[in-house]
Length: 139
Image 1 (tube, one colour):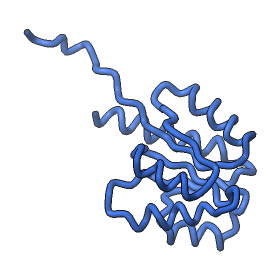
Image 2 (tube, helix red, strand yellow):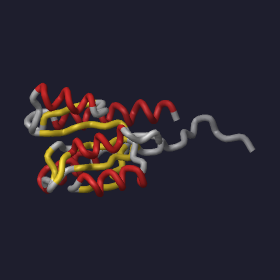
Image 3 (cartoon, one colour):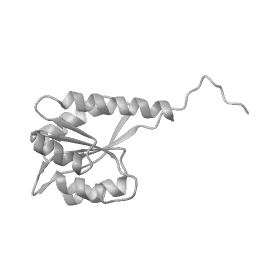
């Protein structure tokens, strides 16, 4: 039986993992990301150790990582991810610590993008939506 060429298979959503300890920022990101049908939030952690383990086990496409975490640092997560040879997610840092020093260190540790919480959250969401749409076109 031939498939109808006009019937498109629904694209697999881009899987996003949040590493953030601020309930306000988590709520904001969840609201913004859930509004986009091409995205799926697959997990959330407030501490580096748990985040590193869950990112490996859940294999998200994108990880949003804050630098300052509850009793730990997002740099720990970045170091853990950069030391792995398995498939790693696209890493987006979202932080209040956005000086060139922090941006440079995040880049050295393997971050693909860096966004400032004080004004660039919508840019982060826009970048993820763009990646999701590009991803759906290649499936």
